Length: 367
Image (cartoon, rainbow, N blue to C red; front, side, top):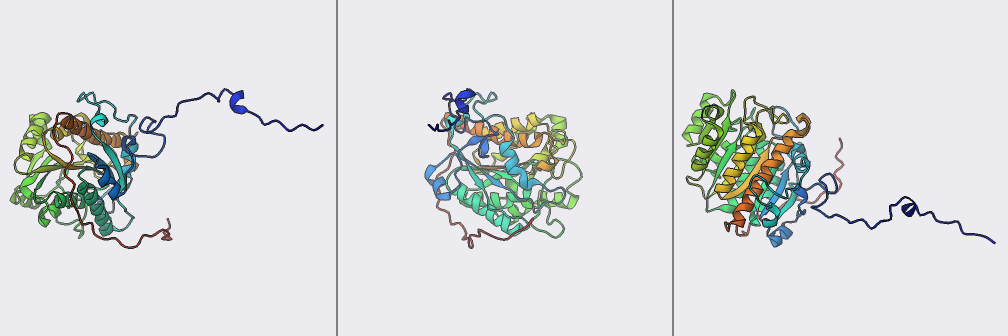
């Protein structure tokens, strides 16, 4: 008489056969599963985004072909998305559960490839145009600061005939005419926006400028355009709260909506070492996060970007965490506005997105 070999039951033998609950996003830890901002649903398709009509859409611009010093910001969007232990359930700062009031999605990344500066900007423009056209507030994770040129241009096009202003936190003015002959470098986006007519010079407010750039001729050009700025020296003398209050009042003087642009190097390198052009003597993280909450709480936010996070130069994710919290604080402030009956998303707009070429599935690219 033959006997079938018994099949071992190691689950029962080791006590692994209990009926454990299965946790679904966003309830799973941030280090488990697909990488999206705060485990929000991934909605990359433009038609699906328009049909869902979310309040906010986070998207990545993984691009650093325009840097002038330390590279690595192309890795910023992924690092920012994963640099958190929390999914943002309850803001102690604002006393709100943001995702109970706002529909926030992750719209994926712009279709960027390396060593293609003009193409990168064109694809970022397309992606932001789709998101802004859906009515959602885009929060763009850079990337170097050159991405603000296509991103803010797309938002300005969708919001026309209304006009947008830019509140710009940065150690540097980014108003150079060119970077070593390159008109689209990360030191030039604010000048390109003004020259193109996307944003009027008088609708710019800059906060945190310090160091040894720009030179007098560039600052004279800025003054001619009607730009307004607050040097770090003023923050040292008057305090961050007073300066931010002035910046908010200036931002509300004229524009219909505000594009908030945060270069992480506005923070002191001790708070944000992972960036391309660190400048000693900057804001501390607490001051910047408070400023984000204040500004978003008081202006009509058209869009936001957080740029120049360079993970290869970061330590223990402190820079990426600060950038993540900038986005989360903005989302929480928007949630307060929606809870209180104020508008957050915009009306959906019919936008014409420039056509793309063929879809490439096997390029043969090496490296």
